[in-house]
Image 1 (cartoon, chains in turn green, red):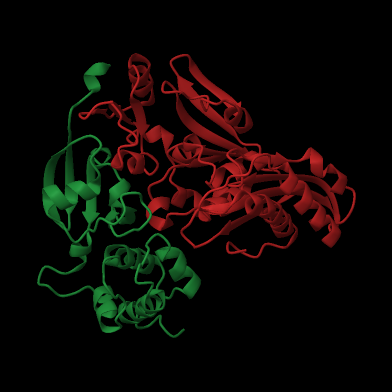
Image 2 (spheres, rainbow over the protein chains, first blue to last red):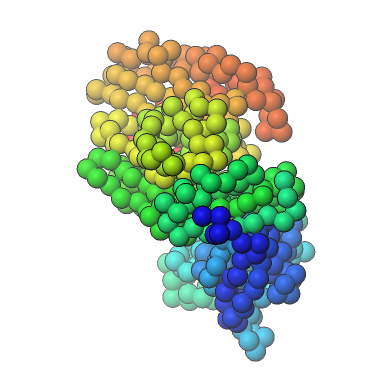
Length: 168
Length: 290
């Protein structure tokens, strides 16, 4: 049975649409591999404890904190980083544009957590109330403490993504 | 301790058990990694071997057999929160899993099995599992065995050591009982400073049974049942609430004293959350934010 033991693991990830095959070290976090082996530095390192949410990515469409996901445990996965929200031609995602226009973020360090959590929320809920927004964003800390403007920007993103649902 | 750990991803439960039984110390069983990676990142935990059980399909999923809810150990919190069988058979569990910290990011990756074996005193699921008299199932080289969650808690090695794997969690519904969960916390993503799960039985207005489990106030869960027996046989009122607060605060042996709050306050809050959990159980369902 010991022949199952490996000194590294091979992973196949589709990262922001592009296929990568990578050799990762046991114990390395998804965050470290994304930043150091793939160069996706939009994914931020805030705490390495899973508290702050600045390292958030989507794994198979669901938000996750990449600092506490061990890379080797994801042999095959589709990963969306904050950089993957933007279209290939540089056009911002409606959520990004809404946050830009509504000044939803201040320093922007928490943007990966706030924007990707908003994206997961709006996939299934076109018109969330404040409590639903708060629950969806609870895993990300904004150290500028700009939570009111974040809520406003999420509302603006709803209007842009679902013009028919807003205002009901 | 090794700077160069090795890694294995067994394909089946039996393969994982065989592997664990042949390995010596320094082994860490990992799946979602939400408990383990923070310690690895800071060098607090330096495993020699990671055994990744995340690929073992038979450990994932929720089903029900009659009134019994069966949850695979690798079922993630997000799947438990909204599952129809959990809502129907163990809504207390659904609510306490929803009250967990870490946000959707952690709820999407963390597993019920990982939460249980972590045995962290501030976590949310354990009080409800003890209040609901849940059972768990383990497997090791000697075979599969089922034991009560209470017995698992009483075993300082969590009944697991590094040779066994937690496989399933069982909760049997009790249709005549009502339930409440109350968590006192500083921010929406945070750990509780005290939390309580209450399971009650009533006949009309009259309390006939009461069972409260308090978490996050001491380094172990505190089950308060017999000491509350004097409250049965009567309807709940403000005086009964005050009595619950007094008895439950007193039941905390040595309170935790940490950045979540000092010991004197934690003991007092243990009583408060116990009363509020009982009151939540007695009120008609008011939704997940109650």
